[in-house]
Length: 173
Image 1 (cartoon, rainbow, N blue to C red):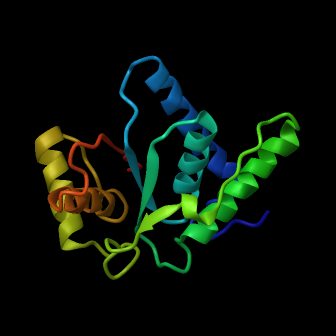
Image 2: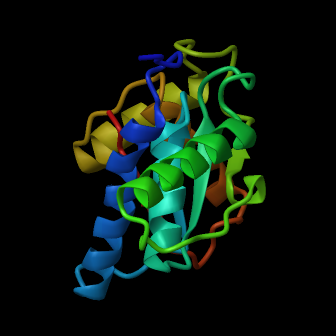
């Protein structure tokens, strides 16, 4: 069985498809409001591809935004699209009545400015974000994935790009 660098496969993506569907159930049950944006780290693209596909299948209006933490050659919209489309094919193969869904590479928005030197190289902003989360919320993050992702959210918020918006941060620690 072939496994891509980072381990993301179409079958593995289904876990985060389910997470997107579960999020929709929580919104429907009034456990939380529907977020305007859902942010997650993008390394081998599995989490990101699954969340985009799951939220689209659930009919959510939330925009899933990935923050790249790995080299662009492996963490990009096209590979994310391929994973999501391949996962959708698996679902259709298992159940021919599974709903069809149109997706395109444009559905996979990735922010590329927060990866720093690359994978496993911490950034100053990422470490600051880790410290802020620990001191403000008591939640532990790390510098490779979650720190860089939160740093991207903080940067966008400081620039006023998230004003008045509801944001969900997916902590993949």
